[in-house]
Length: 219
Image 1 (cartoon, rainbow, N blue to C red):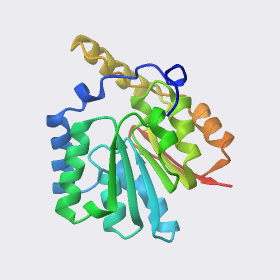
Image 2: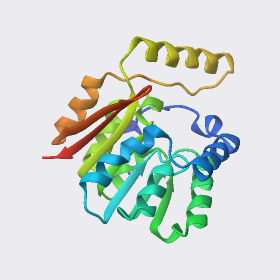
Image 3: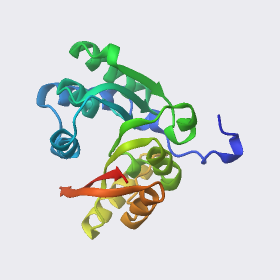
């Protein structure tokens, strides 16, 4: 456990932002319609290019659509899902039980950036729409990269003026609603630099709407 002086400062009210209503809405969308296009493209490279079974670490797992699909399609053998919202964990557990996956997934509640020392590495580490919800990119992505034995797969906002405007307007809305949560469009060069420092190189990149999708592989 890192000492308090080494931990990043408070990163946002994830419990207040991603509450039960939000989490259940996302879970229902996955059950009714499957993965969103962004998440589908995020795992497509792994499904098309990897042989399983993989040990998966799903950081900021939300309602768990990504790891549910990796398990359902047979690529993942086991998953550790780390999530800062307890409502999301409840929703993901509900889906796991419904799909008969509950014995294959371990759910951990907390901030991955501060809890990473106590979490094992995995074949594939996935962060789907996660670094855009966290101000301290180096701490979160650095901890995630260090746990990736083979692959690090990310989706994050594109560096386009219209994406920055959209995220900026959303932050204004959150401020007006007196929410402490904020979103971030981190520089892509920093994302690549952090992954590169840990020996990871990009092997796949594409875009889907607002999102950049990048898969890194360990050299």
